Length: 488
Length: 100
Image (tube, rainbow over all chains, first blue to last red; front, top):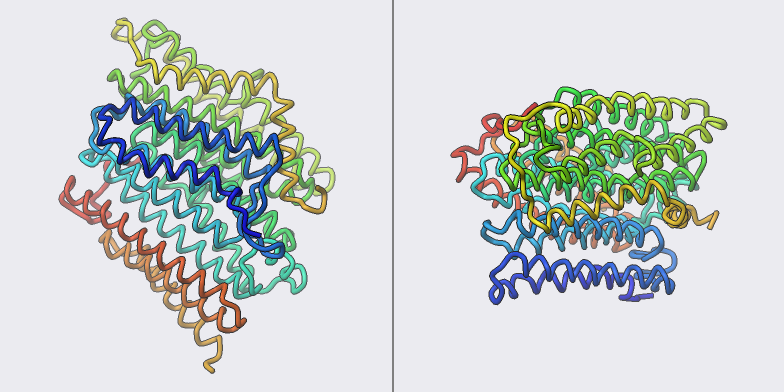
């Protein structure tokens, strides 16, 4: 079957992405270009919602080896990527207005989003690889966007080299997996592995895949690049990377390991579990000593990636419930982390530094900024009734459920709780600086409207997802079930 | 026909050479070249297995990955050139503004 409907959302984005540089010749203002990009994102999201309500389009590829299938999982992740792109573009409209090559900036964000959405609907290692590379290459250029910025150019070089290494590792892993099974279709790989069992080449390829995708998600011990890149990149791009690009890596992990490698789950579940615990612990411990707020947020998103990765070993026992929890945490984290980064961007726009100490007395100078930052910090730490609390509760209950069958899985839950307690210190420190300490200046700060709107969107989502989570959780559960065809 | 083990040995050696290059070299362009060697090691695997199984899947994957690698080098070199313009160096141990 060959139904182009499966990639209409991506096609819409790419049409807009291609049109924007041409339109830049007519429209000089960054606000107009941002507006057009937002229309593109909204149109694509409209297409996704249409599929969500009226049934999904046909697949690309054959029944035995599908290439692209737009299912519930793809729809949920597409909406996550699109909403992050939406707030990132909204926040960028004023942030980049004095830069050259404005049109390219918006084109690259749309291209990256299209690549991520392609990954979310891919069912074959070939399409997954293409999607990852589309998204990666666009984000390399986005990180380097401020060409004269010394830190930006350094961050871009580190990112491009680590990104290349990560592609090389995962590509070699894919090639070995192809050699062992004779196919690149995820379903086919699983069938072949179930039939022939595991050998040295399979173990090697699984290791390479964990390392390759691990670099993309920035899980320990492959996380060293992330703080440097998030600090050096333009702040809306950091938000985009932390909230969207990282989630792309996670959806790849979910797909490859649950659909493709579930037959050999006994050989990878404990490895991924240990990596998840290591990631959340390292991320939180190093975040404690950070004074630059972007670096602190970067380490915090490393830790959060550890929480999301927890879902993978849990899923080998409790199946779709664990993945539901993982997806829900991915959604809530997308909003709270991009919100926090955009607050930093908004304050940087009005010349407030990126050091935590620069936020002293902010509550008096910019009440809305300080309040929304406090909400994001509390949500990231997991304080009820915010969304970050709910998603951690679901993850925790998945781990308790899994522990009834496989005992060591309880340690994942214990690590989650201990780490949340640990992380409270550095999240609350920001709030203390904003609300308790007195700053040198008390002059009011005026933040541009577009940035305020972007922050408000994230804040509303963070609060609403914590209170009315049932419909979202149902959607996550529908998405998670597509990974387990036997149960659907 | 050449046995498949020969191809695997070749690609394994290339992959290790590339990985060592990435880990030890300090010049950004040499590191990028090492990454390319690793990618090409994977391509050899794809083509060899493709012939081994008598299916075109692997060969197609290799073609796609060659195209992607070319694009990646273009982006990478542009970024390295930009580094040279702002910092007058492409040595990876001299770029240390960002660290904890």
